[in-house]
Image (cartoon, rainbow, N blue to C red; front, top):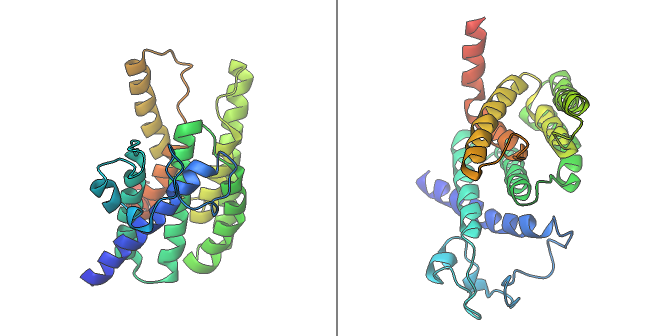
Length: 254
């Protein structure tokens, strides 16, 4: 079992390397397949032995072998995060199709998180196909009742749409982008409508804490924009591991 866990971690790190490509190229509307990985400074193709997830970053001391350009810490961070989640999901679901579905879902959320942090956008190329794909995966693989999944999709998108509409009507400025609405629709369709209780509470509380802290640190006013996509994504991943526990306590409270 320990060997399988090790391979799950390595598998996750390798996928994380690909996610770095997606994070960099999708906002630029570039191909995620060609060209092969290259240094962002000198654009020299990265040798296969310099492209080992996490390890190469350490061996090269965060520098390009050809131009000595600094390699961002973000690359190994994404690889490590993806590897850790691959391991945790493998421990939870084992070597099953369910593991693959949840890992794919989590990988998409990782890409969305870092793109939203960098550009404050959530690309439609991720959420629009993700809505039907993960809805079907939820129904046929995860075995979420089809009506709960469909209601989750509609309510997830509808809740944020209503909040965004009311906020814009009252304040006369946009407060939430359409990307967040589509993201929550995708999440709600994947987990079912009951998950939205946890996800909205978690993401709103975390977003408020980080938003206030960021405004204080950066000395900004209440109009300072904090991307909400990362908090929705974090809440969705947290729900995978703690959602059942939360729902049991929630139901006991009522």
